[in-house]
Length: 592
Image (tube, rainbow, N blue to C red; front, top):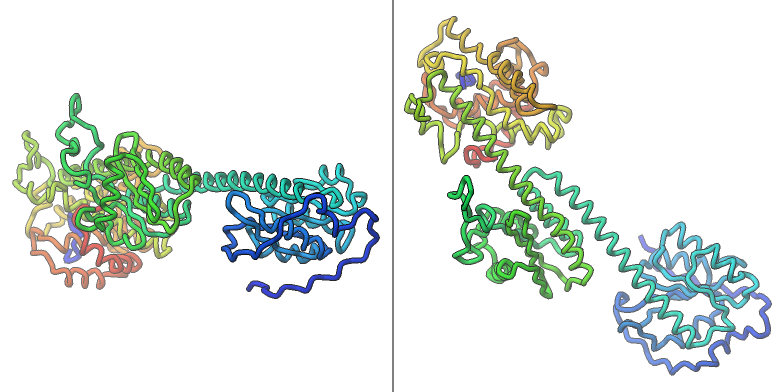
């Protein structure tokens, strides 16, 4: 607008068991006869199961007989369909090495006196305090109760049971083991719930920082995959149109209500986000692009309005407070547990409001874009450009509106935003291009020529060169626009598009070499936002017909931008413009 145109490793070796330390034992402590009161059944050969399908138990004792008898007595042990898997350590030091590499030990049967008189107690401290393992159940077994009195040990150490070997029968060992495993299972479930809820809270906090529906939806898929520990193949589908159930009665805008559901549940369904093998389907209609089996699962979820679970996938139904419906299809390599399903319920309930909030935010943003573009277009036409019927008096309404949008201002806004985000991604100007600035710089760009409202329309549309008086009047639009926006910005706290727009309006005609107007600023003294808009405005101006010449070709326009880098334009901004040029070529006018 105006004269923007330049023409214008793990340790696998197991140590040998240390020799048992010779120590005097009470005559009654015959370890070979400990379980004679309750004879154990004959042990059969152990089946080769996956470690995760068994209860892992660690026996820590310096007497080999204790290991043998414990394994014999518990050879046919099973609890909740899971058998026992035994690990043996003949010293506290060996136990430490095992604990360092094994993460699923549920129960430790621990002797007290081994290398030293308190080796077992020191191991308890290592487990609880250094490894921070609060889940594993520890049963202290000692042949010398006098060395570690029960009352003192229970009070001073985080152990879960205390047994004298001379008193522990086979049945007592079985009972004690079941009780310990039941406690371990409950603790693990509580811990898993806690960690799951922490993930949900963390995910929600991260998601709600998103200002784009597409980024929010992609984040939902990422967080769900991480929460459940499943693969990346997932899609999120949403119905186009407004919230369901709107009949227009008593509404200010009944003509804008969505589809009433007379068609198929998949009508109007599109892929808002995708990951894994579904990533290429983003923004595509679900029908005709999504696999028939996946579409059937999504449709069934919508029709039943409930989560549906299968062996290799799940479909999650999310209904927002304003009745917008979203479905997530998530492939999994395992059936989801009850805990997984409970976490899903909490997560979906917590994020449902996020879809509504972002929908409202995007609608407000677009409405704001449209309002600013209408004002900018009116200012561009100058005084008397609008008739009493609301139509342009110059007959150029078709130029101002394209596909229902004010294409010129919104196109400059889109180019500006893409250049700014590229500079931000490259790590340039981090102080000037924070997240809040990236959100509003496009709106500010729309207002760059708002001062044209103060310029005579005949000057703006003059096909020939301007005389000095006309040029001075035309250049005054920069100060007029900045003054207007500065006054308006006082109504808002903090940086807004009005504050940024005032800087853009005043300085977007300044040149990098200091030959611009109105203040003759040079280089970095020109605000970055104005330097970015200068490139966007110039490219747009060269690509359309002007009163004094026809539009340039894309190649010629790009060549002119390159030529003026370091003269009229900031070279870093030009580099960013060239980097996003393919996106600019593909974008539709006014695409955010």
